[in-house]
Length: 168
Image 1 (cartoon, rainbow, N blue to C red):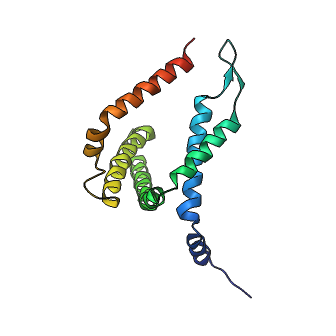
Image 2: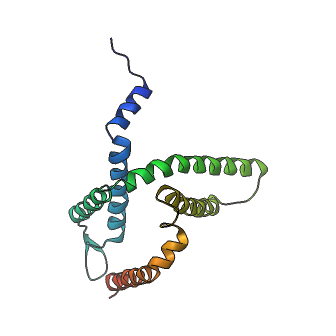
Image 3: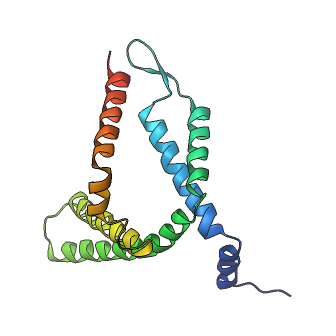
């Protein structure tokens, strides 16, 4: 009789790349698909702005393509392997803070704490990226200095697309 425990199952999944490739693929696919669905970029609308047809097939093809392309190099699996365990710790700390605040009767909204924790995660994620891929090339200041005008152009193009899609 063969007995399996959860450790053996998880180690087998890790050996087959489930955590390195399958889960990051699923996360990226789900995020891109949800953003495309929510934005309605490829949807058909009538004169009143009501949704007539949502092109889920196009959204799925784009989401699959983006998710597969993101896994070409080992940047995404390495980054996900570093960020998600620590992100779980940050979530646990946030939960403990909420519980302590509830015990003291302090009036604070969870959305406020969510924004603070989100900002901490973003700053920490950038610093983690720097430590994973070298100190000179991927810091926040380097990124902003190097890609500032590209980000401005990208924001302008995004704003133009939004104005065209939402305009009359």
